[in-house]
Image (cartoon, rainbow, N blue to C red; front, side):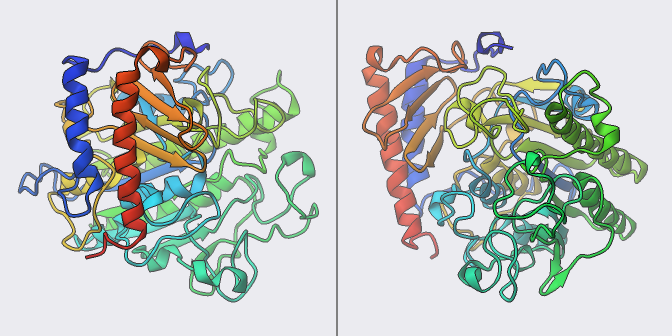
Length: 494
């Protein structure tokens, strides 16, 4: 599907001049640590008492890697059904074009450049940050993390994954030190089939590992505690095998729960079992592994949704789904078969293909029929949205929050985003509002401007014809970058 076939309806109900004036005003609030953050003013409007919350995220799944987004081959019946019964985001953004920074944004509502997670395998969640798990524990939630962590090392004593052990002791920041009661977590990637065993080199991204030897990345359940049982077969199933008992326990004990389920699929090394490869008989072996891996993941989404219904808790559970960034590789080839469906760029790029990802929300008690939105939303929005829905804010929360509460969108009252999304990754910086995107790929030396409503594929650069808009959006970015530098200097922790 070409970029020109991706449909987006205009989302601004007022003039562009009025919108630009508005985003200029809110940029100041975004940039100053002492100003009010983006949470809706504290209120007693808690419409739904302590809903359960699940954040599902895949790894390197591109915008086009779902059936509901038009993939001609890939089978994702459960995600498709979720899209047909919930809120479907046509412009959902990962906060970064790589893994670790996006994950941090999910848990803090803040851009990772505020606290030093600049790229994958870089930095860690700092103790002074307040995670969503820590916040929800103050409201009686049971909290669990399952799958890929990638926000710090999980052991100080033995070699593990990319940084774990003595070499990464300065970045020790496991989920159990960040508010999670129950954990089944890896520092970084594992193979998507038989996750503890190094596969054949054709699966990709093995480093110096030798086939049929231990992969060297472990699942940890607590300090010094490694999981060793039942770790064969599909990795998405292995993760869900641990998440489901946690959910059952919470339901049995009538506790609200917060479950973070972060799959490794379809990150390299990519493998699928015979039954899943067999669903694609007319495809190459590499395609069978890639598509089969995502179909196996999709099966676990279906299992999760069925479990929620059987437990009688589906109606008041917010089930979120997204990917952490765009697809791996310079193009769809080998085991990096992911597609952006015509969007420009891929993983590691701030063009749309690197950060626009599949996004869904199912919450039957509030979202009673299928809806779609073209309002830009982001992983940084999880934190302020959930706290707003519960009607509280953390008294010692570091400010500012980069995300925005989507409660008005969920309630059908949001017509446009009230402030733009800012991005930075290595040499790239970008700002996205309801219609336009300003982007530089050379640290701000040159700029491109795109109309994402008319040109989602970012083909026609309009910077030369709109210097006024470029200058205005550059100023917002300059202010935001200064704010991030202040945050890194510790000014957010009053």
